Image 1 (cartoon, one colour):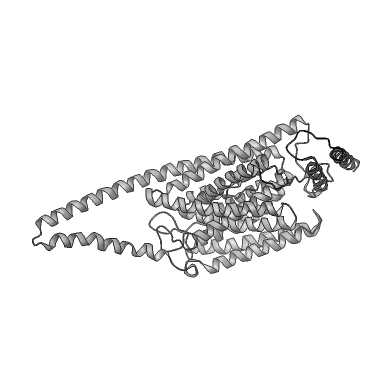
Image 2: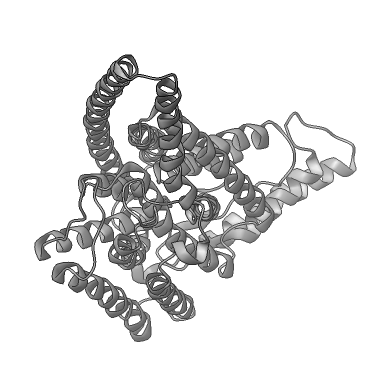
Length: 478
């Protein structure tokens, strides 16, 4: 307790000296006016909280003013939101280092701000995908059955990840992050190469078929008698063109017909239940009986909804779309693995402030889901988890609202641009594997950026001889 007041006293003296110097007309070299620096230090003192175990939870919120930090941070945010929207990642692996290194937030506030940007990216992407049809089947591009299986477990994992964020040392989180990102990025890249080769074979077959069709048409025109033969054969491609366009025109259907409202209702129930439990838990003493009761109540909610979907999948009443010519049902063992990976994705999201798509994206691809459906479904799942985290962080005053509104709006519109550019490129090149390569690239960039920040933080703690072991969750009070 005495150390706490020593820190506050030192900073108070600093502010007093700065204020006195300002009154006497003295000036110092710096990037911030002296009065503003003094008020900024006072805000830092007000936001400093000394925990009972001796560690400091220090929220640093830089003043919002136009400068190179905002410009560069906005550019990186646009880039991250666009890539996250296309790959189905959310972009948290790019947002968190940007908010720490460029804007100047502390790590915990950066994680909360990152959730706001992920929510903006996810909401925008889901809005763009609501009217889009599946590339193969007569169903939405968002696989609601797959989301209903993964999403409850993802939100349960987020709750576990928040606890792990408090207990695990930073160096261990960094090591696990780097290993995870390298493995998933490599698997996604190999899957992209495999998909690229399949697309190349399909394009060659289509080219051969079109060539044979043209040769047959020419032979028919040569052998046919009468001046109307050529005109009749020329109208065939036009008629085929209109016939083929019937399906794309059917894609622009009403949202009410393209959304599975029963599945959305179940996901909304999970979202409301988790939010109520999380908000109520924040008003309970850490490690009290009610604290753990509210934590454990999340298990029947998430497991119950996921098992309801899993039973339907095993019995064949529900189907998860694949990139083959038929929809496939899953075995019970496979479903358990997918639910476990959903929890793992949530743990990663809760620990690091990212969207969890680094696991969900490669998982869906391994399941055989087309890249468009994988990206859309992963983003749809992240919309629920990220929005719940944003509301919780807002109630706990974990981020400055002006900054959050600015970067969330930025991510929202950047995701729209990313979606439109991706669809045009896929339509022009005929290669959906581009989504997989973007997913792999974004995961790799996230490994470099988050891994770099974590490594730098660990080196700093070693140099300062700070404690780097496991913390006690019962002594945490942020």
